[in-house]
Structure formats: structure tokens, C-alpha cells
Image 1: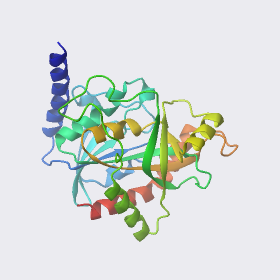
Image 2: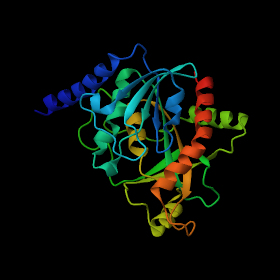
Image 3: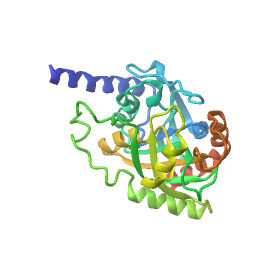
Image 4: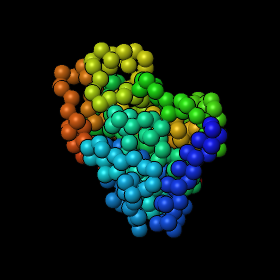
Length: 279
């Protein structure tokens, strides 16, 4: 029974991938997850093919504000890319397996490298709203892990090493590109909570003690799944606000999206420069 169940669920991934393949004539090599307020990069993709999540067999739909819930596939900076214009979140009521389902489908489509972005709260007191942070490591405080349960041996091992989940050579490339563009790129550790409530000042103080520099409600599950699939990973946080207690300002989700949209153009330019130099 267990063998049949696992085969059946791998077939689900394949079914989703085969549906997408019917509409595209390229094999995407790079997947890009566009977080809150950061969907604009999809607008500059050449010869775009747009596929709504709701039309793909076995897919869940995105309900978060400012997440359009679709794939955009085409050419960007000379590379074949597939963008998630909106992601799935644990706080939407989905399982973490649902959240990372698109990553596994991208793997079956041919994606070898994942670039993930998010809008985050700044914990590091030297950060400012609008800064871009290169994620070098993470802390999973979501209380769950997408690899819990059955393991898909065809995708990766039962026990996944996370030492180099964020690919060192891509981190170096991002730093070199940022320096060339005179972008003051921060770097640090991202901590993920489940949400949807923002963190308390006490939780932020605890996170700072643990070594976190930015906080959010996404990215970590997808990075774990991507590492499990053998993908290279690069990830960024756009610091859209300072986290609870860092200033005396109350947190506002609409403000987070506004700042991310406003400052996201710089991150967009950085990602394009990285792709121009990616090989």
C-alpha cells in the first residue's frame, strides 16, 4: 500500500509538469520565486507564457495579497526561466508539502537553480527599510518541515544535508554583481515563523539572540525542498520594514507590500545582472 501511495504522488508531480510542458517550447533551467511586492520581474520576461496555478492539475492556488498565483515562463537575461508570480504559504492553511509542491514540479521541468525572494522584517539593528539582504543561512521556526513524512527517493535522500543549502558560488556571484552595481548588499540569517500574525517584540529579541538578521513567513520550506532535489539555491530578503520592537512603529501588511514594490526594482536589476553572469 505504501509503495503504491508514493508512486501515485510522484505521478501527481509528473502530471503537473506534463500539463505545463504542453504550453512551452523551452526547458527552464532557473526557477525564480517572487515574494510579496516583488512580482515585477515577471513583467520583463521575453516571450512570456503565463499559466495560472488553478489550471494546473493537482496545484493549489495562492490567496495571499499581491500574489497573482501563476507561472511565467520565458527568457530573461538570455536564460530560460520559470517564475512563480506569487507563492503558497503555510499560513494560508496549506501543508508544507503543498507549499513546496511547485519546487518539485520545477525540478521535473528541468530547473537546476532556484532563486527565492521575499519581503522581510529587519532584526539586525544596522539594517534599514529598503535594504536587500543576501540570505546565507536560515533558522526554521515554523514548527514543521516539508520533508516530514514519506520520502521521495527519486528526488532526494531521506536525511538531507543542509550545510550548503545556500550555494556558496552563487552567493559569491551575487556579492560580485552587487559590488559592480554599487548596491549596498547586506547579508545574514533569515528566520521563518509560521505567521500570519507578525512576531512579537519578545520573539524578535529571541531571534536576535539566536543570530537572525531578518524574519519572514516563507522561503525556508522551498529552500529545504530545493536542496533535497539537488538544486543550487540563491535567496534574498528585501527588508520592507523593521521587525516588531526594533522601532515603536506598528507593523502593517499593506505597508510591507508598498515598500517591497517601491524598492523591488533594485533587487530586480541585481537578479538580472546575476543571470547575465550565470553559467
